[in-house]
Image (tube, rainbow, N blue to C red):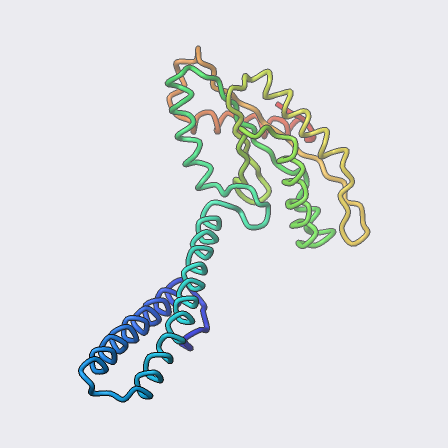
Length: 245
């Protein structure tokens, strides 16, 4: 590994350690030189040279240590982001979403708050990939996710659940309100003109909704609500797609 050819957090930490040791060594050397000068074992000219050089080197190394420490910080930030964000859609990934949802569900049950889950699937998405290419499919997922996020409340949480499926958690939302939100999302996606390489690609989505209501004592796990939303999604697709159930 070249000393300043940084490829990973581990490399940066090694670099910082090496630089720190150099600073310590320079400090020790400087102390020894001053002591020898005091007892007359070193000439004045040698003292000046031996003192100035370490003083010039030390700040430079300190700056390098600071810069490498910053790199560690930003790399750790990037690693943390990658652990919870889907790179293509910029939505949360499934694992992080489920962790959040479990916590939110516990809070909703404790304080008798309602919540809703929307399960979204892109209609005939395989045809998009087959007819326009996978890059076009990626473009659709990326742009539609941006549109969905723009329409949601700040408290709502959206994630890529798998493939072309998106899941949305809406706190303090009844089933009736969830249907209204879902219809707004469906209408916006249908109305938008998705284009890729100057070709318009018609896109629609099907949505399944489910909700936890504070009077529902039978629902003991968030997985049951997700399952219901998924079943309602397939009702929408079976009924002709581009609709909400």
